[in-house]
Length: 275
Image 1 (cartoon, rainbow, N blue to C red):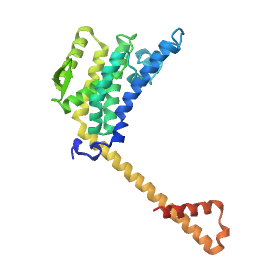
Image 2 (cartoon, helix red, strand yellow):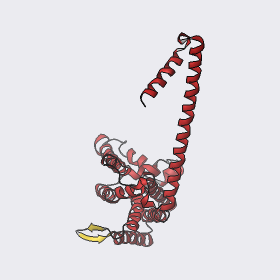
Image 3 (cartoon, one colour):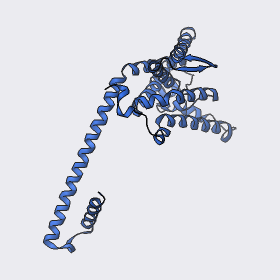
Image 4 (cartoon, rainbow, N blue to C red):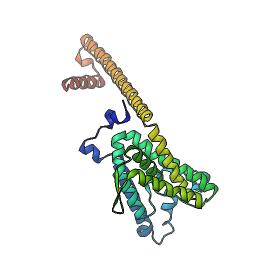
């Protein structure tokens, strides 16, 4: 069974489609951006607390390495530095993220998104700390790079309207990667190299997508077996308890039952009646 043929890769219903993980990513990114704007430009515009939001949510290599602000490895993914960056990142998530999640499944898509974001973040932290320690990194560009590479490899000939001109997705991604390579080589761009590491994660994910699907399918199967075993054990325990209560009734009468035993008997009666 292939990655595309699995049951959890089938299109979801309308209600479920509305609340996909990808939509949660989009909503979280927009919400954090609005909160950052309100914090900096409205609530604390003239206060020394104004820069604190960016200082704690954005990715700062020195803070991660020296102050152990590890949460920044994740929080920076949902904070874009400007409205245009937010717009393009959210459009990429909307255009390709929903389809990738529908195809791969929720868990696999989260692995793609967060894997690309974390690999990109680690690259930025290591190189930024060694080369440009004062720089900060915001936005899901590493995760977007991973997602775009996976999308281009899955649907290479999908048409994308770029400046009113239809272009195949594979060419858009190749140009994007080429620009990051150029920036890395000519300017030693740490952010560009972080983007490339995210793109590398997307390539590795796509190469191993069948194994990833098999692994998650195995995890789901084992979880279902554990759940079934727990339910069976609980049913056996209830049955033993009810047998003991019935024997007590037979020997000493209904009035001998404790409040807990009466409640257990009533609950079992309701459970059987609801079948």
